[in-house]
Image 1 (cartoon, rainbow over the protein chains, first blue to last red):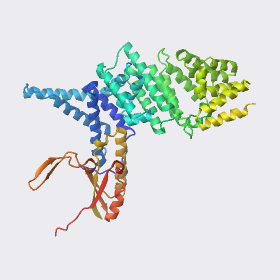
Image 2: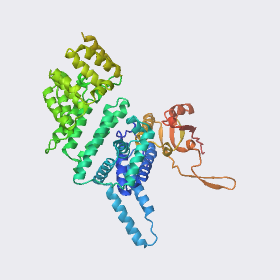
Image 3: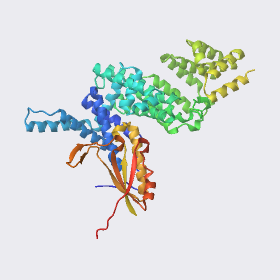
Image 4: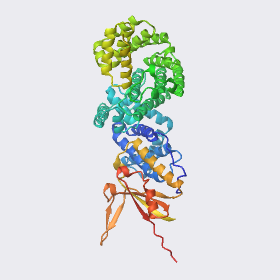
Amino acid sequence: MKQLPGESSQQLVDHLFRHEAGKMIAVLTRIFGIHNLELVEDTVQETFLKALQVWKYRQVPDNPSAWLMQVARNQTIDLIRRQQKMSGISEELAIRLRSDTEHTIEEFFLDTEIADSQLRMIFTCCHPALNPEDQVALTLKTVSGFGVTEIAKALVSTETTIQKRIYRAKEYIKKHSIRFEIPVGVALQDRLSTVYTVLYLLFNEGYNSVKADELIRHDLCAEAMRLCKLLSEHAVGSHPSTYALLSLMCFQASRFDSRIGEDNTIILLQQQDRSKWDQELIRMGYHFLNRSSDGNQLSVYHIESAIAAEHCLSPDFDSTNWKSLLYLYDCLLERKPIPIVRLNRAILLAQLDDLPAAIDAIVDIEDIDDLLQHHYIYSAVLGDLYGRAGNVAEARRLLEMAYRLTASLAEKKLLREKLNALP
Amino acid sequence: MKDFMFIFRGPSPEDLNMTPEQSQASMQKWFDWIGQLSAKGVYGGGDPLMRQGKTIQGKKPVVTDGPFAEGKELLGGYFIIKAESLEKATELAFGFPDFDTQGSVEIREIMKIPMQ
């Protein structure tokens, strides 16, 4: 029976264990109940240990996923048998009960049921009663198979904090007997919108954090996209908004490599090398954006995705269709009246040569003084606009403020050039 | 060519408490090492050992339950490797992937006694 590995070394699919962990945890939770999550996690851990020991020395099985699931299933059946020992029944009944149990357990391991369980897990982790930060940590742990160390790294936090969040979420679920199920009707719509928020948060943690290292940031974005795709492939999650969010993530991710400079700082759209944008992801973005146009739902994700698509469409910064973007930003502002949307909309007005309106739009942002003093992007943009409008004193004051606020060398250089260009 | 046994010791994987991603990374290192040894045509197979075991010892033999060694002394498995000399075999053992996690390799020649 002993097979020797071939001449070249064997490879497992990237993140196979992580993804299989998520699947196994979901299936086993459906069998043992969400209140037994610890038992479930231990059982999954044991499955991996077995794989680790056996595969290291032998050939990896042809279908590693199926192998892992088989081991998990056998362990499950063993555990249940141990709990089922009854003394007051005949041997015949005991045998029949045992075979019934095995048959039922088998069904939980069917592919369609695995997907169903994973969805239940996503919906449970995104229960609206949990804090957003707990939702994210618990999702990464139980749905995505991340370890506490990896979550801490990805979210630029400490292991203790992450452990606390996960513990708090699990305790809440236990104490309030949160059901491990897919909500129906209106509740499903509500829950889906929480799921979108969590997935988008997950994606943005990876996309926007310059503090975490490249690899883990990439993992986070990829994971958010994987879960969103999983959601879209299931009847309950196959909604226009799901596709809109997925397409938005594709468009954003296409710029992943071009948006971080050598000094690990964000490169703005204007300065990005567009030849580095991932065309395959852009193609997928359009594909999902098309699918998102069924029905008459228009979510924030639809608008944001359309904005991202507009940028991907234009060959260079100057050919951007500002008019069309301005319309999209007006729509976005209605649903998401937050400072950064207002700022971006003001930049569009400036691109359309309406400097006074652009400046007014920024000055009118709520708490703008505070924003100018603490976030370099506001002072940099407003300072630049004042410069173009000929208000040299204000331009100098704000650009110098931005210069002090930013840690990015590239940005400092850019701001210095703008300051020097002032009359 | 002589046959050597690489004997691996170290903490059991369950004591290392690895995340799925770390487990996969650790396994990939083993695949790569075995791949290299196989490419050189020196890999003669190997097996892991179960953690559970028993020991019998004493003049009046007494059976004790395993694991009987300190965590990092635990015998985890072995490889059979072909090499010209103990020195060459030792060089090959430097590829062992678990030095970082307190693992060790013992390299021993398998004694062949002519039976005629």
